[in-house]
Length: 200
Image (cartoon, rainbow, N blue to C red; front, side, top):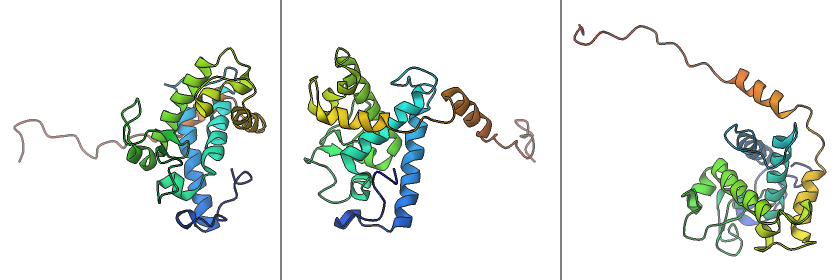
């Protein structure tokens, strides 16, 4: 992300931020993308031992091409944040004044990056399914162009960038296992609750 769009360089009014603030925001973006890509309840876009890592790479690649990770687009600030006026959040999900299939509004998508990525991932999956007869690099064309076409430069740019991401050092299984180990254990109650009717 830092290499694709170095933080703190935009001169768009509502996107201006310091490099330090930008790096912190990028970390939050990556964390939200990881939570979605590694959600055990969601099927990754790709198979294999690193399919979730590849799914995360594609989400972040699309976010780069759709928004450049700009602060205003990320947070929904100013008139330039919504593309043609109907798109929302880092993935520029087309929601207008309505709601996504999940029931989320523009405000929901810019207020919660996980919702942005979940809604976007559902659309990406839909595009992959609709364009399954196209070669892999063109399967995002329904997302980018509204229809499945061959040799779509927009689809190929997004998928091509994701494919160039270095191979993840850990398999999905290893990452999920480490996430489980890091999950905090709820604190035990300091004392047992009083039995009903025995309050003193």
